[in-house]
Structure formats: structure tokens, C-alpha cells
Image (cartoon, rainbow, N blue to C red):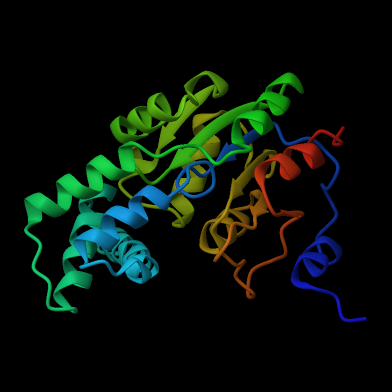
Length: 244
């Protein structure tokens, strides 16, 4: 019988550290912890009801965050998201001003709820004495607003934004900085994320990784298989609780 994608990820892994507790769990925020459905609705409304354009907007935002980093400059992630919204709108003959785009993205992304299973998963990991760190491309100010709204602040030992590095994930420098910030080695870090580009970047920087298989997301086939591959964060937590 042909194995499905999830079974392949559980079978073909580098098992050298599997089963050994990472010293720190780093969590991507948007889509991994927080539900982007509200942003989808707002972006869809701004684009004339075209909610189907959200993946294009999100991909464009990521593309230009890399362009900004590769060019040696820096803009807040929210500003890049607003600019990407203007670009997608213009390609569909819709005009959105810079101010309106920034207001829409800023307000919608600040008020996202956590996915239903997130708090239970984080509670279990805290009870198991894991150190939990939020690790995001968003600004530190935005991250604090997001966690206050979603009620997640109490679960985390540290809130880290890559803005201090002047680069965005998945640049290697961001993961190196994250490990140094926590005073540990790269292979003592585990990134938990729902984006193939993020877990790939973490692994290439020497980190371990867990992939949260959110709808519409896929791991990057050219990257190493993640040691944990589950459909939601609670399943990831239950696996980590078996680690020694």
C-alpha cells in the first residue's frame, strides 16, 4: 500500500536526536498558533470579495520580505504585508492607498484568535517543563498585541521578533540569533511551524523542527524531513511529552 505524505514524514527522518528533549521550543506565530481566517475575510473584502486571493497576498508578502532582507534593508513585516496587498489589488484593478492598506493589515492581524487546540497544547508543554519561546517575523510591538488579544502571553518564557536582526526568517542569521539569544546551541533548538519555508530554514541553520500540517500548507520537498509531522499543535505536544 502506498504511504501517504504524513506517514512518509514519520518514517523518513534523521533519528539522531529524535526522542531527546530540545532545550527550547520556538514557535512560529501566524498560522501556527494564530488563526488567519479573520485576515482572510478582511483582505477578501478589500479585494472586492476575492477571498481566494489571500494565498497570493501571503505569498507576495513573504516574497518581498526576502527581497527586503536580501537587499540589506529593513521594513516592518506589517508594512510589507500592506505593500503586498496594494500590489495584488493593483493587478486586479483595485486601488488601495498605503494608509488604508497599513490600517487594514495592522488591525486585522493584531486581533487574531488562537487555533482551538493551541492553549491545551501549550498548557501540556508547560506542565512538562518545556521552555517556550515565540519566534516571529512580526514586530515585537505587534507580537505583544497579538498575544494579549489571543490570551497567549502567560504560556511563553520569551517573545522574540527577528526585527532585532534586520532580516526575516528563513535567513540563517535569524535562527542563529534566536539560539544565541537563548544561550543554547542550534541543535538544542526546535522550531514548531506550519510553513515549509520556515522549518526548512531552521533545519538548514542546524535546528530541529516539527511541522504542523495546517490546511493548505506543505513541507518543502527539497528540505530534510522533520522529526515530528502532525495535523495540529496538540498532537505535536503529545509527541514531545514522550521525549526524555
